[in-house]
Image (cartoon, rainbow, N blue to C red; front, side):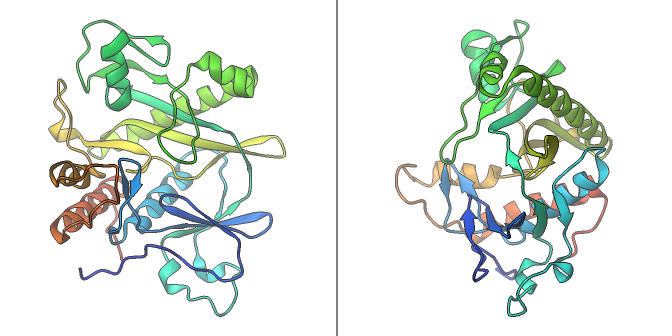
Length: 295
């Protein structure tokens, strides 16, 4: 591949927590959030990265944090202005790094669904509900819901997050906070969906994460990206079936047909799958932001 891939950042002397995609460095009352080019599928981090994926995710989140009328955790995305040790090479960090406020993270994934897909579609087929919310009979896969619904989930360090009812969320974090998280998440989703649709993208569903600083609720992590959301091309939308997407579709499809058992170390991805996947991430960025991807 012509582009370089960052599978793991390495900033000496800073404590780090590595997630599936992000390396989080503890700087005291701040965090440095580095989006790598790692990609996961079927709960495995794959050995092959997608060039510039981390930059796409960071730039899309930065776009939304700037556009949405909501308090958030971002302090700066300008690596040259971050107070890092002089010996650190800032080149690999450019475009993929956010300096953010440290928060007390709310232990709930705030999922909003506007269309019937994924785990929601599976649950609906089973009992006509999603997370305890009853839906009309006769809906098809990928149908748009009359109104977006809030379907929380627990945050899990590994494996799948577990869908829960709103009542269970209330038991975990309290009613006032639950209602505020629900209302604010629905509001942000509606705003994002409207802008995205104008630019040729359907955001079928998404998940938000929130944190608290001195009792103030602020938006954290990533926002309305192809990794945290289901992006569909609006001009190809056909309810009644699965939709083409802007994220890991090529990767999942290839892994499904490659003979991998999903219980052992995953295989490396072929160059053409890597290239096609990168193209979809970049296309999502350019459609949404109306800017050319510069890296």
